[in-house]
Amino acid sequence: MNLKTKVKDNSKLSKIPEFQSSARKILKAINKSQSFLILTHMNPDGDAIGSSLALYHYLTQKSKSANFILLSPIPTNLQFLNGIDKIKILQNPSEYILSDNFDVIFILDLNDITRLKDLQKNLELHPATKIVIDHHQEPKNFADYYLVDTTASSTGEILYKLLSQDKEIVWTPEIAECLYVAIMTDTGNFRFERTDGEVHRIVADLIDYGVDPVKLYNEVYNKIPFRAAKLMGIGYSRLESYYDGKLVLMPIYHKDFVETNSEEEDTEGFVESLLSIDGVVMSILMMEIVERNEIRVSIRSKGDFSARNLALQFGGGGHINAAGCRFHNSDFQEIKQKIIEKAKAILTNGSNS
Ligand SMILES: [Mn+2]
Image 1: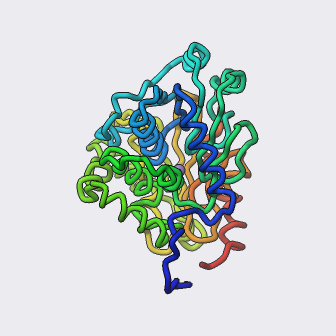
Image 2: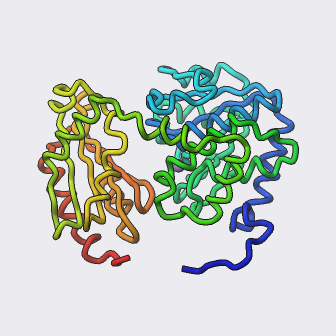
């Protein structure tokens, strides 16, 4: 590991050369506009909601009209966030989008609007300036401005760097708290790769701005519903192990959701927890979601073993260490066998880091 002996003045800026000029252009676009819409991905996580809500608070502080809409529900452990009641959850967002004269549409923690399903068409038609702030690989070409750093820990980290360029910002505890939750959740509470010195310097600033890290940890992580704990127990009792314990797979069937009275959202954190098993470098959660006739697969991994490569082979995507894919009208056991087979090459050719 390279230990830097000196912290440079620009340590809080991105390593990407065009970052500062993009940031300046985006701040300019914000200053000259009045009406904003903020969008993020389906099944929003802490980074999606935390960064979007931080941006919402920032825009409101600048006396702008800000709107933040979601296409799916807010996880219960994020509902404590200040301003969460300002989020509109819409069944029919396409009409909403065209009904308003937004000057700017922000798309956060997402780089591919086909993932917004029905919204895609009207989003493309909308004359607003579109700005993407994100850290995922291979952004699609649909927006006017991009603030993308695929080496960043989270969208929250990138947004912090953007907002830091505004010399007039007032760092309220609300903004700081939302950004802290974004960074904390996307780094798995500062455990995942990309949790570097820069990340810690940023969260140190956020703590100085009024964040209470103990309170936020409790709110986000110590909130597993009892039904989810029961469901996790069923999943653990079925755990399967492959390739000398390098891969573990947790199947969860429809009947398990029924038995424990739990839902898809209750599986939050399951697949990550499997990585704490000794020797495991890749974990897979396979869920049967009968409402959508779907098998949802979440994959996590360590080091160079690529969860993303595995997901890509089945039409999915994600980051190297966190990815997923979905199957429709498929047989659970057949899909499982295929995934396990395809994982073999990754687990045997992957690095041993
Ligand atoms: Mn993210």
